[in-house]
Every structure is written in structure tokens, then in C-alpha cells.
Length: 225
Image (tube, rainbow, N blue to C red):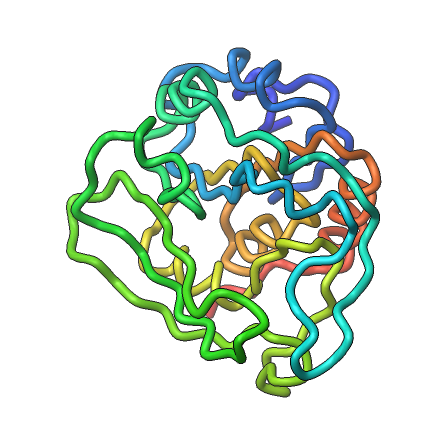
């Protein structure tokens, strides 16, 4: 199978486009060959401990959704993990890069996600990248009932990113094979599959592997014209 070229022998779920690995990325990334991945697109924990209550955000306009209380956001990735992410891939896009900028090289190409939302959440999120390009902004509303109807999607994970936003980023940064080291509910994989690109996702929480596998099994690859 295609994923075996990346040191993966026992995936949680796999098809022709995506591969899900259940485990701690700190133990899996060392098994992946150097520069075998085109792009790492990932949203690691920021070390803010926002998941301890199971609620994320405020309640200005509507009650926030209750998620399972967890400690997955107690610590940000260490320098060794970020080094592994850079070692295995040619390029990287890391959500929340401002929380770990002291562990990453300087970058001219930060991506800015303008959420166009209410005061419940931050107005924008920043992504550190390894690309030698200018700063780029993406406008994508992502706040409960304020979401555009055509873009509305169910939230499985408290820090889930919009699939449409991820697709826009991937279109601007082409890659045959993408890896998400902190996969969550699998939005990166769904976005890649819809673009006919291969993607590997790693996730430590099995409940999210199950959700991601279901989402990927229900999604289809885009038909070529």
C-alpha cells in the first residue's frame, strides 16, 4: 500500500487517498523518512489548556458547544517535535505558530485567517510557514450561527478548522502528499481527498480517529475533467 513508503505498517484507517494513524506523533514521526512528505499542514496544541473544561469560546450570541474535557492542550510541542516535522517534510504550515515562534526559524510568509466573527473568539489566527513568500490573508467566517450557509459544517473538535479554509490553503500551496501530525477530527484529510491529494493524519485520541475515519470513508475524490 502507498502509505508503507512512509514507514506506516498498521494504519487505523486507509484508502487510496488518506491514511490515519492512531498514536502519539512523537513516536511516529521518527519512523518517517527524511523529506518524504511534501507538506505538513497541522494545528498543534498551543499550550493554553483551553480544553480542560470541555468548553471553548464565550457565550455572547449563543451557548457554546460542550466537548469532552481533556488535557491535550496543556503543553505546546517541544523543539524536538517541531524539528521532526521539519525533517520529514519539504515545507510546513503550522497553525498557532505565534505560540511557538521561539522554536521555529524566522519566516517572511505568515498566513492570517480572518474569522470575520463576533467577539466570542479571536478575530484572527496566525500560521507560521516555511515558504519564501509574502504574507497572505484568508477570510473565512467560522462562528456558529454566523457561518455562511453554504460553508456550514458540523464541529466535532473544539479547535476544528473549516474544511473550506484548508482547501483554499492547499490550493495555494500544492503538495502531492500532506501530513497532519495533530489530525483531530480529520478536516485536513477530507480537504486533501477532495483535491485528489494523498494525506496522512496522526492522532493520539482514538475517538477522533474514529470520527476522522468515518468522515473520510464518506468523502469522495474529485473527478478529473
